[in-house]
Amino acid sequence: MASPVWAQPVAAKGMVEALFAPWDPIEPALIDVIQGARRQIRVQAYAFTSREIANALIAAHRRGVDVAVLADAEMNRRASGNRIPNLLAAGIPVAFETRYNAAHNKVLVIDGRTGSAVVVTGSYNFTWSARERNAENVLIVRGDPTLAGRYLANWDRHRAEATPIHQLPFVP
View 1 (cartoon, one colour):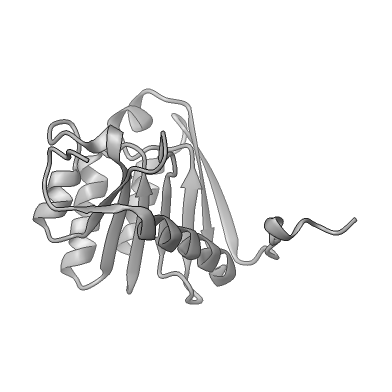
View 2: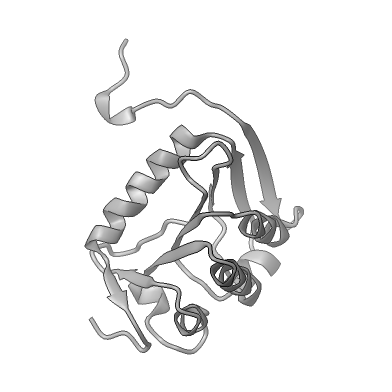
């Protein structure tokens, strides 16, 4: 039976790492991936309270990496309790997704469409709770530019419908 057109299967390439919280050090692995970025980082976040991940993104931006963030509007609309103001203050473009009840993606795409592309996805929110209290999972896929391209196309589609923000609180 042929696969449906919407499935668009991608032949697996590269290396896959599976991490599980609370046992595996997910946040250090994410920071390592961010520190390895050379050209571009695209982020989709539901909740974003991790100071360490924000700092890694800011450091990447300062060393010339093109960093841009999409975040759920409802979860991040207030200035207190999240790291969106830090990203904005550093000059990182942030847009809020307002079309959906929940923009629940948790994705990093690093240097997509290159041989060193990295895709990070899973249940892990970029939060203290995900690191310290939750049962979470993350897949890190390295060296698969076709898969990274699919994720970048999805990021672009979401960005086209998102609202750029410049400060918090956000009022739609």
